[in-house]
Length: 293
View 1: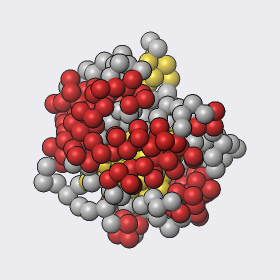
View 2: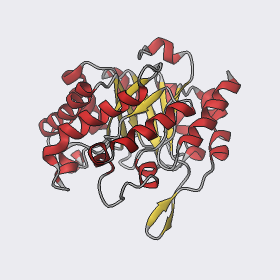
View 3: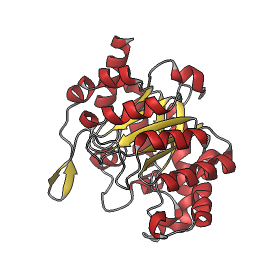
View 4: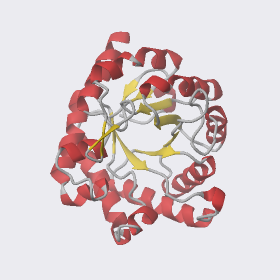
């Protein structure tokens, strides 16, 4: 499978589900960054990726969301950044094997806020470029910038990873604020983000995480109105409840999939799940997509 914008724009492709929540269910400690499982629990990472593929996913994201130098330095793991990302992509590639599927290198926000000058553009360019190169070395077919809330930061990330690798890039923000949940927590509006990212050279635009699949439709509509690029849509399984200090997502795979038809009608092209979703959610998504045709 190749990342071809025109082809992906004309159909619906199923992506995978959540990673950190699912790895915790499989025994990875919540007290360490989920990304460290690439080195400490590689068999578990491969097993989860294969479970998503068997459920019908054709895009597998790498377990590398927070594996940038700024985030890892907080845990004393800055020197493992390249290894964590490279290994994450290698494990996803191992899971895919000969299947007709893509490996999408996951890159999350830096953890710094540009608006209050916690980091410079030059610093972030280096941070995102470093992560992207390691993901490419590990075998990523495409890069996905996900769960961003600051438009300025995701634009820097887009330029940085494009320059560093030349790979196709999906740029996705989390819209969970405003009357219709079409703004990020930093106030960036979905349509404006889509226009800016399209002009900056993104290969697909998206929305992920947020308040859940039940509230994401207005953001999808706003994105589709503003761009002709493929739309990446990966919402949470609702909002979590705290149990013993841990988030628990209770939305069932059936409930999750029931919200899909309006999203597809609105123009979603690459559909999966974020926090709280697992292989069964993806199985239901794949069945729904197949039924709708």
